[in-house]
Each structure stands twice: as C-alpha cells, then as structure tokens.
Length: 382
Image (cartoon, rainbow, N blue to C red):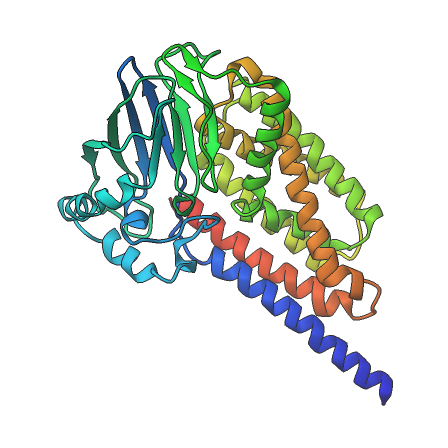
C-alpha cells in the first residue's frame, strides 16, 4: 500500500508539472496575435536625426508592457489591443497621435551636450485593418534637431528595437538590438562608433539567446521533442550534435546570402519537423539509426529560420564573423537552457520510473504534435 501511495503521489506531481508545462505552451501557441519587435532605420545628418520605425502601433497605444513579451494575449490589456486592431486606419492614426506625446518622452536621443526633447512626428502610415488575426505593421518617421555624435535609446517597456544605421558605408554602419532600456554607442554622420570583435561577439550572444528564449517557441518545442524521446545524455548528445551541426551550416550560408529560401516555405516545414519528432516519440521508445540523419535534415531547416532572423536586421559588415559566431553560440546556450529546464522539471526525478514514458513522454509529445499541426495549418494558410 505504501508503494502504491508513493507512486500515486509521484504521478500527481508529474501530472501537475506536465499540465503547467502544457498550459504555458498552449497558451502561447494557440494565439496568432503575435507582437513583433520594432524595426528602425536611423539616418544621422549634420544637424538632424531621422528615425524610421515599423511597429505594431496597437501594442503601444494599448500601453502593453512589451519587455520579454512575444504574444499580446499574455498581457492584461489584450482587449484594448483587439479593439485597436479592428479600427480603420484613420481612427488608429488619430489614437496614436493622441498617444504620441507619451511615446516621445520614452525615446532617448542624446548628444554630447544634453538629451534632445523636441522630437517631432514627421509622418505616420497605417494600413487598413485586413485580417485582424494577423499583426498590423504601421510606420512612423520621427525627426529631431541634433548635432552628432548622437545616441539613441529605447524604453524598457517598449520591448525590442532592431536598429540599423542608413546612409553610410556598410562597414561603418551601426546595426544592433536594443532591449531592456539599452542605448546605442555614439553614432556619427560617417558611421557608428567602432566596436571591437569581442564586444560584437558578446552582444550577438544575447541576440541568439533571445531568439530561443523567449521568442523561439517553435525551436523550444523541437528541442523538447528530442528530450522526451529519452531524457538521457547519451541519447540527447547525438541528436543535439546533429541538429547543431546542421543549423550552423545553413545559418552561415543564409547569413552570407549563398542560400535563400522564402519564409513561407521554411516556416511550415519547421512546424512539420516538430510534428514528425513528436509523433515518432509516441510510437518509438528508443533512438533509431536513422533519427540522427533526420535530425540533421531538420537542423538544416531550422538554420534557415535562424538566418531569416539575422537577415531581418543584418550583421555588421566590419565584424561579420564575430557577430555570426556570437549569434550561433547564443542559440546553443538557449537550447541547452531548454534541455536543462526540462531535465530539472521532469527528467531528474522521473526518467527512470517505469511509468515515465506513458505518464510523461507520450502525453507531452501528443501536445507538442498538436501544436505543430496547428502551426503547419496556420503557416500554410498565412
């Protein structure tokens, strides 16, 4: 009786952990209301700075805290976002113009003398509502009188800003990812402040890690699919090694623009790879001789997905190699963090239990497969 009671207690513990994991995954995956990071092009002139931003205006007007947020449905002000998302273009523009003074105070433009406060909203372009289940990307242009060098900062609550300097040679242009209230190095008319190879390497580790945690839910689910086949180092080692080698190859080829595959092809295939791994977990309880080969093929797909992220905001031409290596290291650290979290949550405690496969691995794989199928459908129709 004691053994049965102990087993029942452990089963309840496993089920609680698993349900929490499933609920978190499903809550994020079930919504198509994605909040995309803002992307900015900055031009520094002798007496002015112009900042051209593409962003989800609805998220800003709704006062959603975007720090670390990848899905607006996780925010308390989701209904406000939904209401704004359905507004005609003219009405959303009017709502943003009313909000603009608040946003203006949260964008930092600094010179060597002082912070610039007289930012002006030069133009705003809002597309029609269209499909309200798909994020609407608007465009605003901001100007400010400033004598270079200048530094540009982004409020913590505004999430991520991918910033690219325009109008200067590629080798001198600043390209960076601002988050958590960060500010750029000094930017001049001739180009951004020089950044050493080590600084670039370290900075792009953060970019790569952020693409896995918290933004890379599809890659997280794929790694969890590998984990749930067998939560043992020897089994995971060969799978993760094959996956890493493959996505490193296509990440480099994609970043160098040697290989380019449209996202509408790559993204559904990435979702399909998640489905395959999860379904195989349901019907197989060990690593087959062919699985590392399949994992390698799937890694090639995921590498193309990583490359599309880098292609979105580019790599600094003067420090291309350190940035590329740093991004890849960040991705690997993110993947290892996912495996470590899964191991601490369930693997460490239950992987050797006779009921682990039926009570944990198979149910988790079923959920992962269901989410992957939904993504295949969603990304194919998008």
